[in-house]
Length: 213
Image (cartoon, rainbow, N blue to C red; front, side):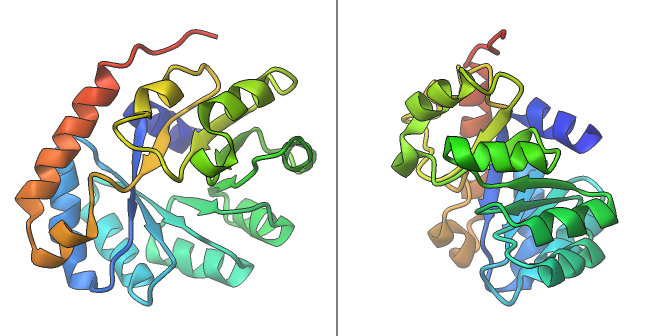
């Protein structure tokens, strides 16, 4: 729950995809300098484990593993230092392995049926993915009516343009996005640019009032 509390305090979760683990430390430093010491490192590349290990080893970044599809990936993510696990969908095997490791799991769910399946597994905080393609803030608002106990972290299509719409919802803990860590800045080594975008994102989130249930 401490991890979930920290995610809620940040309100933003940068989605990190790296091909070169050598970029992990300077990217983490850029996020910290921008006021956002959080990262979800996706298992979309072979560099994921080393990236997680490098970022987690700093001690000043809350690092999770994203796009986790199997129990084996959970093992690898936790061994590398991930303190939470995010999955695009709901997998019992992933959920149960996370429970064995004692790490927070945030599986994806966008329908009432998927939310009910997650509740049956004892989960009440879920990733809403892909957010914009699945109805956006309006869809989350609709799901929150019958599932008042459920909280969401929408990801997928979230941007500065619609960030406030999501953060205005009482059922939203935080939002995930990649606009503050764009590929072109990371691959070119422009980490000052990442810090600037991160600072702007943090300021935009801070300007969005914290909703009350």
